[in-house]
Image (tube, rainbow, N blue to C red):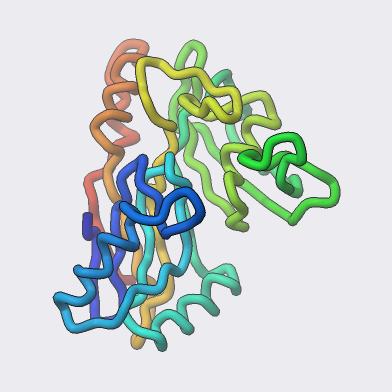
Length: 231
């Protein structure tokens, strides 16, 4: 679960199906609940979650170890100095690359969803094709903002829902989960120069989906081994 650790932060690789932080309807069994004893065993205070991932999304989250680290990284996050990259398999065949710049707001008809709305909060998503399949496209996605369900809502609005996303119209190809994985996270190093860049591999279940969709050869070029660097 731990992808990177230093004196100021721990980066965890959250599995799909796990809620990030306790909330209404999810009082326990969250990532935060797992981190509390982990922090205590190291003589640290209670963890403060800096950002979140949807329950259905797997991947990297940065958790500060102390208050000063939280303050510095929160400022960096608000200033746009975090890089958050995702792998997403969507239905259909998108353009080779593009930007989705569309404000998002809660759907008044279904509060579980967010929709493109002129009066919503600004949201910007960038994407680039990594591999095409007959009826699907594997994308590298980065986000400039971090709205709830941003990637899911943006691609659904364009007619390319994320595979496995039943809430937004995505089909389920023998996969009981969303094909969205936060594999890349970069942020300023606390207490030193440079950036910490973390990257984790696509989970085995999602790799199996790509294997079933391959045209001729398995698309191994899009898989990365987990690695962390300080630059």
